[in-house]
Amino acid sequence: MEFSELELDALAETFNLSLGEAAAMFSQMIREDIILSVPTVEILSQRELVNQLETGGNSRLCAIRQSFSSSSNFNTNTLLLFPEQGTLEIVRRMLGDSTPIEHITELEQDTLAEIGNIIMNGCMGSLANLFNSRMTGSLPAVSVNAVNKVLGDGEDGQMYLVARISMSLSSKNIYGFVLFIMDVNSVNSFMLEVKKAFHLQ
Amino acid sequence: MNTIEQTISNVVNFGIVIVNERQKIVFWNEWMARVSGLSSADASGRTLDQIFTGVVDQRIPYAINEAVNFGMSSILSHTLHPTPLPLYPEGNKSLNRIKQSVEVIPFTYGDQRQCLISIHDVTDTVRRENHLRQQTLQYQVDLQKLSEAQTALSRSEMRFRELTRHAPVGLFELDEKCRWTFLNAKCLEMLGYEDGALLGSFWLNIVPESERVELIKQWQVSQDSEQRFFAEFMFCRPDRRITWLQMDLRAIRGNSEKIIGFIGTIQDIGEQRLYMHKVEHRANYDGLTQVHNKTYFETKVKATLAGAQAVGLKVAFLFIDLNKFKSINEEYGHAAGDRLLKTVASRIKRVLRESDFAGRIGGDEFGVVIGDLHNDIVLPSVVAKLRRAVSLPVNIGNLYVRIDCAIGTAIYPAHGGSLEELSAYADAEMFKDKPAVSA
Image: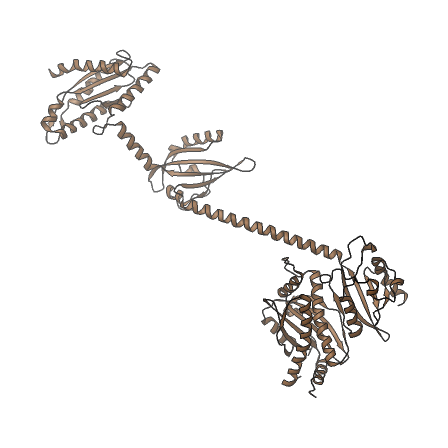
């Protein structure tokens, strides 16, 4: 599965548009300016992805997972990943809470689910709009786990469409990743829609 | 919705609301009826905004719109939306609103997009987490206090360590069984032991046996009277150097007033004692002859007389005057005269017993006291011994000279009750003796 530079550029721009809108929504929600980096897009195997995440020096990650199916013939599991400490910081900053509890609590998990939900719904809603297709999304689920466990057991040949984006909140840099897990057919269908949207055909 | 599904929806312990594409309510379960005070029949066909005019969190209609029109599921967390709908325990509006977590999920029924809204009561979870937060904050405060206390303690320990290190006296600690538990550097230096060599051993073990009996006695007294233990004793260091130590010890008592150890100081008073001894000697002894000077001799005579009076003893007072000492001084010089005086004095001392004493009471005059005179026969023998000792040849450098003396005696209480009376009597006796010797 190989794409031309032009196709990958179009893919990056797709996520730039959709995640940009999602981030704007999130920014409004936490009443704080968020600076987003230009997303980089890569297609990686699970092993390659785990290696990359581990290289980032994060021992535990917080994942917000949602699945979407599109009328344009692609299904995806979306994962929003934050380092656990950064996640706690986001949530507690939003709540104005300085309680030094080391791990995320039940209610904080719910809050995080809603944050991820807003970002992901915003992103997928923009994509549906861009592709002019219908989208159905599940409820988000939150899990906190070691890097090599957070992705779960990947199926053979499963590819990860990885859009990496960094979010900067005030003085703190909190990096997040948005992953789109698709099988080969879904990736091809997704790229077809991207090419249509950017008139690459 | 068929009967079994409806029945289940009505027995679950959370709210279920189903709205159609136009956001009108098509299902309202029993839980919702209970907490809103509004029956299913009253709710049907209306929107949530119409039912709860103006008090619905606007994220709810937004999420419903996203669900029925764009197929998106949404979650409304309690933290960001504490009470999105005005729901009360058992519908009682005088109580606090139920804390909620809401999920909005789209589904297709027939050919219609509808959406399911589930509302969960998280009041207990919120209470639990608030409690957890309060506890955590309390722990943080406690931890902070503890950490401050530890810092203060460690500073105080550091201060104590530095003070003990630089203290000019020996500081030490004993446990309740009087075993060494701590000795500062100065203490070890004074005692002449290596660091750690004494720890755990009984403190009296380092004291010479000759001193122990007295110290144990003093220790017992201090223990019985619950007073501090203060003692001066001779100490022999491991390097055989002998010195004197002064020890001051106090008990440390625990909460129940039980002794849990002792803390004390040790000072090396060896040099101090030596100095005191020298000063005392200088004050009481004649520098040339090393017998008592006149002042101390008289004091001692008075004390001896008082003692003799108390127990009814006889005491002899002797007055010795050297004959022709002046001519020896003039003929051979003062150095020869001094040498003669020294020799005579040392001979007088040699003749006397431990309980007797002599003093230089004039240039060439000596006084002698014979204490505890059992019978009068002893006295002539002592006088004869003194006369012989004085009259032996004296080496004054390059030649020997001889000198005689006149001796007058007085006996207490027969010849007087006071120093003055005895002195006058002996003086007169001495003068009687003088011509005879001169002759």
